[in-house]
Length: 138
Ligand code: T46
Image (cartoon, rainbow, N blue to C red; front, side, top):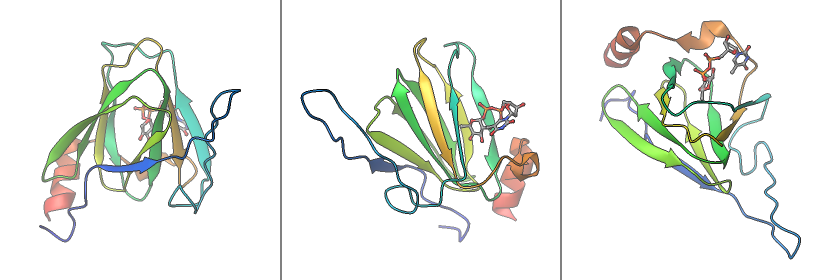
């Protein structure tokens, strides 16, 4: 394994604090979420035939959670790929830095919540797959 190659699929199981009224999941930075949370955003109104992502981040770490519905996440560390379904509000997918990601096959009801370790910074994006592969293999 190259020193740059990171594990692709890392799930975090969130405890569900349920009672007769329903369920509740609490997400705390630097506890169950393995970084301080600086930003939260969510995708909704997505379309099954419209894929998103197609980039990597130089430094950003994220946890993605499908609160409702489902979508397929493709992850690529420059050496291997994995595809997983995000389909549970009690499971988070940790996405490390320098991982290419694509989101496909959103269900019409999908709400994808993302917790991010940094504020938004377009300069942190690598939007060329060729450049990403070159960086991972140099
Ligand atoms: C990621 C996947 C899972 C902002 O202004 N602030 C933000 O915090 C974000 C995330 C986006 N934007 C702007 C940038 C674009 O003009 O919102 C627009 C859509 O963003 P983008 O095309 O990057 O969206 P996705 O769905 O391709 O990717 C997003 C995140 O950007 C990315 O970090 O990992 O969701």
